[in-house]
Amino acid sequence: MSSTEQGTSSAAPAEPTTAPESAAAPEVPESFYYVHGKDKVVHKVSAGALQHSALIHGMISNLGYTEEQAKANPFPFENIDGDILQMVVDWCNQHKGKPTPPEDTNLPKQKEKLFDLVLAVNYLEIKELLTYCCKQVAMMVKGKSPEEIREIWMIPTDAEDEAAEKEAKKRAGKEAAGETAAAAGDAK
Amino acid sequence: MPISILSLPISDLQYALNCMEIDELIAFSLCSKRTKTLVKDAKIPIEPIHAQIYQNYIILKIRSSNLREAEDESYSLFIYVDFSNPWIELDRKNGMEVWRKEGFTQSDFIAHFLNVFNISMIHALSIENIEKPFLDTVKQIIPKFNKLKISSDCSNDVAKMAFSNLSPIATKEVAVHQNLFDNENDFSKFLTRNLECAFFIDYENSLELLLNDLLVANIDTLYIINTKITEKELNRFLKLWMKGSHRFYRPKYIKLSLEKKTEHEEVFRGIKCDIGNHERRLKRADGKELLISILLTYVIFEFQ
Image 1 (cartoon, rainbow over the protein chains, first blue to last red):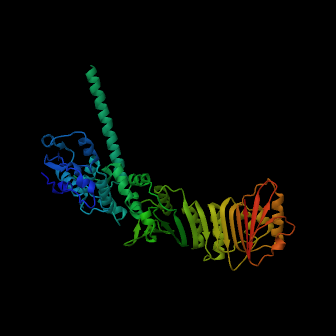
Image 2: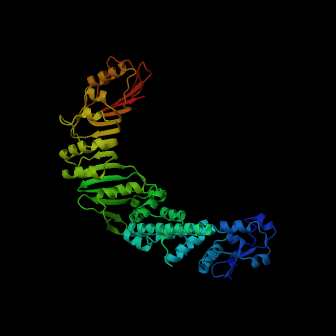
């Protein structure tokens, strides 16, 4: 389970000299939610950190779960690998309540991890992290030639694209024929 | 499992493309038809493309309109297109690189750049100098452009040929930095072209201007630097303009820089006009006005 030390720190009262209103306001205990990915490992995350995700924020905003209810009902993200979800949770915790910096250098450099992170972040609707990830994707081909880009980003040639398209059409045709045959069988 | 960039959601891919610089976008667009379409659909804004012709090659200058990059001239990408070889050379941050694409000629490369950046034509074509036989090649590679500039560095022969071959395909502006006009190259005929702007300058050989040239001009803005025209011809032009009520006259602005100082009194002899500090205003019966500024060797006509 992930630590949320950084998440809870933002609930500390502000300095009276800079923000007297918040100092006077009663301290509200921070609520926590639980998420898990494909590996079923549950991560405890503060509501403040989860605000980065438009998807999760939308899900939890009207739930009003108690700590026990939240623990008993972790949000399942079966389409996200455990290590990728861990990265996302860490990023949300690190950037909780802070203005996002113009660059983030802590993103994975490996292509597969980065692409998986983009897919996850896109799904969870974390706009700022998505921006960093897309910049990181663009950085992968900085100063590269067309041939190098083709290799790094695994871009098929026109001939490969055409062959794949033909194959897809052929498969779709076969599937359609199979369905028609099955429907005719059912009718008999 | 390996993953290809093309499997990313389209919006993320477009965002990544928006983070790339012009040379990387071109490299990506050359990978396949799909990547070309992706760059085109990203609608990356770029500044108008300039092409300079030297001897036997073209230098294309492509520059992002992105504010971050536009502040610094070093962000311009220079692409060299050799008339004799079907590849391009790029001046990138790490040095010169040669890129080839199977089946691509020089004109295919240029058409590709225009297509991916959603531009209809090269903005400005500047002939710095060129070997005569390549003039047709230029026309073939760059069949249309907005502005043509013929530099004073060209020989008069080449400049004349460039003018006759290329000026008819310039859609908006022609600037010639040497006097090309003689019996073979009729200046009056050129002035009838439908252009937004024309600019002629040659400090060594003045261009002789006649009344008829001014009367037939069909160019919005016309600059002729170092020209000869008599006060009498200017006077006749003004009188004819006054008489030409309800007659269409295209030019909006004509600036003449004369070889010699002009006598105001001669220019305005017999013409009734409002006199200002440095300018005089003529009013025609149809309500049109002409503001004439004469300052030392300059005569400026502003048609209002």
